Image 1 (tube, rainbow over the protein chains, first blue to last red):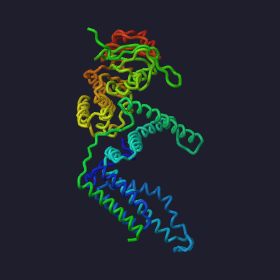
Image 2 (image 1 turned 30 degrees about the vertical axis):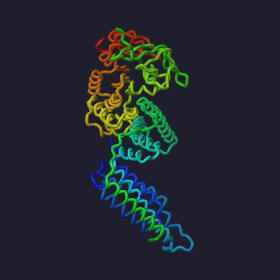
Image 3 (image 1 turned 45 degrees about the vertical axis):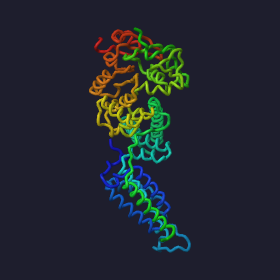
Image 4 (image 1 turned 60 degrees about the vertical axis):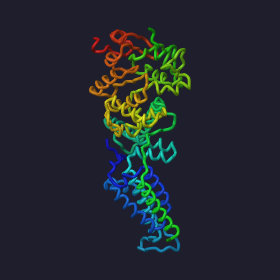
Length: 254
Length: 244
């Protein structure tokens, strides 16, 4: 079964071969350092760097563009208004019927570039690291256990919930249901959502019991097979070093 | 020579928090290496009985001993996962890791065994169920039969002396069912098999218990009990084709 949340098979590249722990730590730190960027220069440089990383990682282009586009489309709803916010004293482009703020447009450019860079880095991480390894890396980096467990189980069971939803949808269709703007439709959709919730809760109960039967007491142990090489350390330093330098440029102006 | 039963149970009762009585005055025993069938209609209490034996649910009983441990005692409950393995009705409830190897290793790692030992056990268990080389596969993408085998491997890797199988042939096609029956025959552990598949019970179990509305209504040799048309009919079951 192929769903939208399926990840592509990891392409063979320099970045794929890096240790998942160093890669995860590098990307998390880089994202934290790049997130506060506000100037267009550093933000555009971050974007250029992220695109270069994606190219080196040989991320499947179609997959990458679809996800980047979808994420940006969501943010566009919030960003599109920036050029229209004219503040006193700011330069404007007067189009007669519309005034465009120069400062707002520069902000839009900087924010969009930064967002693209951040999303791009995360996509590279997902495309170059098998998810099970990523969860193990998160655990090895002492990311709170509850976050790792919930993410792992969500990823594992989201397919089943989707299948369940597809079955319910089919059952509705064969009984003549068509989604329309009516009270009956809204009520039906609400009932389907409720059914999914109840079934998921029941499944969670069964999964919990199955885990308990196999000695689970709250700690998720894994067979850790990580090994650090010089390449991992260099990759981490380069990633964090560049992100740190861009933040310094943004804050200090040089 | 007297053999000590691996499961001794008498006067076992269990009620859910809402007050519904799931099991009432259950008494039976299982000898080492025996395969016992557990049959009954839906809602008879088969799964609940398994959960009580595994110590997941705490039952009231006059006598309860499973592999020499008492599931009613907290200290013994911690030791039970190493002795009692349950294969659940729906394998998807049991396979929650992102790779087959991680899933099979889950139980042994919880028992605190060394990583090298766990790796060896994972390989052995997967070979035992006929799935060598499946370590890096994603459980979700496996067929129903393969999922069931991985679920059994996850339990076998813990080296249990008792295996409780809840509807093991459910969701399996005829080939998967045949392969599973062969696998179960080759497993040298004490087994209790709960199933509606009476042909499976007939082929794999010497003795059978009939459970209905939380009570044991009949017990004895599988060939004899399952051939009793009136008994089968009274408890929502059917005489297997071979015994008709």
